[in-house]
Length: 249
Length: 309
Ligand SMILES: Cc1cc2nc3c(=O)[nH]c(=O)nc-3n(C[C@H](O)[C@H](O)[C@H](O)COP(=O)(O)OP(=O)(O)OC[C@H]3O[C@@H](n4cnc5c(N)ncnc54)[C@H](O)[C@@H]3O)c2cc1C
Image (cartoon, rainbow over all chains, first blue to last red; front, side, top):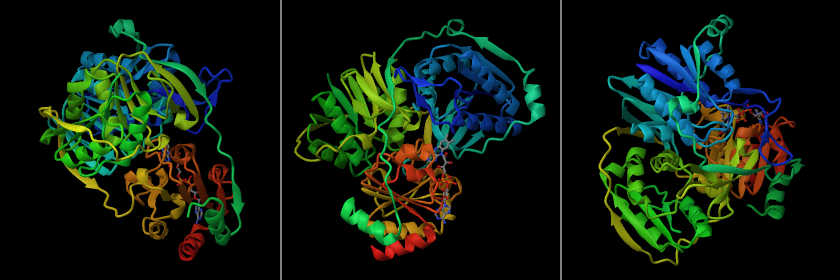
């Protein structure tokens, strides 16, 4: 079974983003970039399926700028067999990314696609669901457990009330939640080896993916800052403040 | 302009988040239809019909809708989508699952988690864990939107008298089936609906120690929340996680115990009206957003607070 796994280059999760002074976007110049944490979990899950003898090949796919090669190399150092970069200098919208994956899924004959549930930059949480819709396949979103059995995959999902397990016919799309696994770190020899693994670059035109602007970004602003409060010295003072000043108890 | 609003419910009651999304819908236009989907949800549809500003309620009941499977729910929404300019839902684990699917089937973009409505096509939504607010315009004829409930006041649950029409449930897709649920049982208020929240982090140390937070929560009639670290460590179940990738809350009172205040956690609670932080590290970032900070050991503070309230 071939597994496609999504890898997005995003701001490192430890870095607090700055908004550009002209409010056109956020400022990512000289910012530490990394694999989106949820994509890292997706890569780890795919590699575990390969180690378990279930996946025959793991293909890491990124839609993004040429700099995304760095994240694809990391994915290959972690264990992906090869990588495809669909290169674009413009921010790709979720629907465009989903259409790209749909085409690659068909071209590669992938039976399982594992994506992060959301990227920590745009916070959209859409691509996996859109991909499932476009390919008319089932989806297991927000997965905290994935188990592949003959012809289907059982996915335990993190839902608002707790956990829900569903069984999906293959091919299927899974999106990862935080508790699915703990990603490994790349080892130096594997980083060296990854440099020689195949990384193919394609464009939307190569894949016949039509790019439309559905949602346009007009402005980006910093959120209203919260006024810092006061420190209280005791539990009694805290209770008094909550009662008399804040009036919340 | 006409809006279809997908109701959030628990099978028997309309969730308060639906009322917040209703307020958002009213800001777009006055022609509002509420869709209630599930296995046996007539009571929810009747409740939706009472809400102020609701023009019509569509009730879809059937086995295929019993477990909120996105494959079926999206087909249901699609079957009536042609009549609406806006398809909206409060942001929750059902709508996040189904709405992007609806958007893709309509070949339109989707707007996630909007926090303000500037016009029928222009909206605001948080990006980068709420560290930036984007103003976006949808160029599509149909706008598929999830609404951050915490950003909108609740519409009145009474005053309306809409007609309830039935809608045929879709056939099961045959692609996906429900296996089982492990739902968290709790007598306490639901996190996203609670007026007060008592939340614990890694500093709480264990699942047993969460009893200290529960005791305070019970005194206050509060819900209990947690940081990712507390969930990852197995102290509490996943549905208690507050943050960028968990639940977004904005109660009148949010009390954080043993939580450092990582940006991902703040993203889920910084719009609370009053924030209290108790942490033994006076440098903890949570104090930068707290209205009232108490530097101290939570194991001393919690019992004293619970006793004195
Ligand atoms: C992709 C991604 C998504 C994430 N999403 C979320 C999310 O949705 N929600 C979320 O919460 N996190 C999220 N995180 C994790 C986040 O980055 C932090 O790791 C997490 O919030 C830390 O939890 P914590 O504050 O409980 O633990 P820590 O950061 O370890 O803080 C524990 C605090 O407890 C204090 N403490 C310890 N003992 C005591 C005591 N006896 N009395 C008083 N204080 C004490 C310490 O001083 C410390 O400040 C996410 C991370 C990533 C990468």
